[in-house]
Amino acid sequence: MPPVKKRVLLVEGPDDEHVLKHLCGNNGVPHLDKIAACGGVDCLLESLSVRLKASEFGDIVGLIVDADIDIASRWQAVRGRLMGAGYESVPGQPFDDGTILDPPTDKLLPRLGIWIMPDNRSDGILEDFLRFLVPARGAKLLGHVESCVAAIPDGQRLFGPLAEPKAIVHTWLAWQKEPGKPLGTAITARYLDPEVPEVDTLVNWLKRLYLF
Image (cartoon, rainbow, N blue to C red):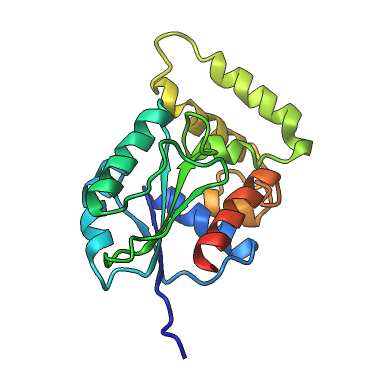
């Protein structure tokens, strides 16, 4: 009987961790031994090579990071770390449906998957992905939320452009029947819909990665 493979998913922070736990639980993704919040993208990337080379860490490792303001720059940062760790055939840009790399046969490295939030094509963050999950019935209210955030008076807008999707998603959740649910439980409560096509693409990448 072949040995059981250890499955690990690395994410930036606790919001990512809870969202992925709920998406996996709602969509039949195989059991993961660990979803590890790494304290931000810088800490994740700085420790990535060491984690991947540790034979006891994981046999299959997924990596989810935000594109932030420049997906090309983020991919090159990830790509450089992976090539430095020993992966030889890292593509010049991420695949739209998520990237999966098999390790070189002469190196003790895990099978590796990389997903760049929100969709492997666009600049943005986790909350840009979560905006895809707003149900169609909520489109009018979401539009009102976006208008309100855009109308914050000069001098009172305390967050930068990159954080605007956070403001929109959390305001949306603050205006639901049970205001202020955390991101993960908002999926279970169906304030965010886990059955949209964008979730299917992410879930299919997870299944291809862990169930090959």
